[in-house]
Every structure is written in structure tokens, then in C-alpha cells.
Length: 104
Image (cartoon, rainbow, N blue to C red):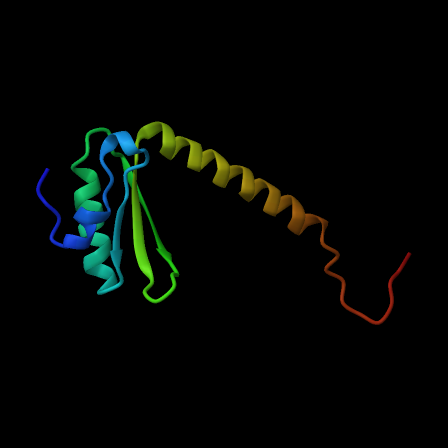
């Protein structure tokens, strides 16, 4: 795996035995940050997707990316589908009538 262009990424990336692998860096250009994180993550064996988020911090905000394997990606898809179904049910239950009184 090629070394990251940003030294902060290298310092913040834990060794595999430490747990979840992630790329963390201070915000700069969104396009270059996300692009660099994706390129580094996709070099890891088994990576099928990359989850990226901006994390507000004390002082500097950070861009955090996590490489996802197929199982993790599938799990996230399931959660999102469940939330979509719940959201649809909730929106169907909302009374959308507009007026001054309700018909009972």
C-alpha cells in the first residue's frame, strides 16, 4: 500500500490489531480529502466501499473515512432500508389535513 499524501493520515491510522481501521485528517479541500481517503481505503484487501463523515472537533474539524468490507456494507444497507420503511410508515400516519377544526 502506498503511503498517504497527508502525514496526518499516516499518524492517525491504527495498526490492524488496534481495531477499526480509519483515515483521519484535518479539513482542507473536500475533494482532495475524500479522494485521498477513498484511494487509500480501496487499496486494503476486501474493501468494497468507504464511509466518510465530517466530525466536528474542538479546534479543527476532521474528515474521517472507514473502509467497509462486504459484510459491513450489507449491514449498513439493511439498517438504511429499515429506516426507510419506518420513515414511510411514519409519514403515512401523519394527519395532513389543514384547517381550523377536525372532523371526528
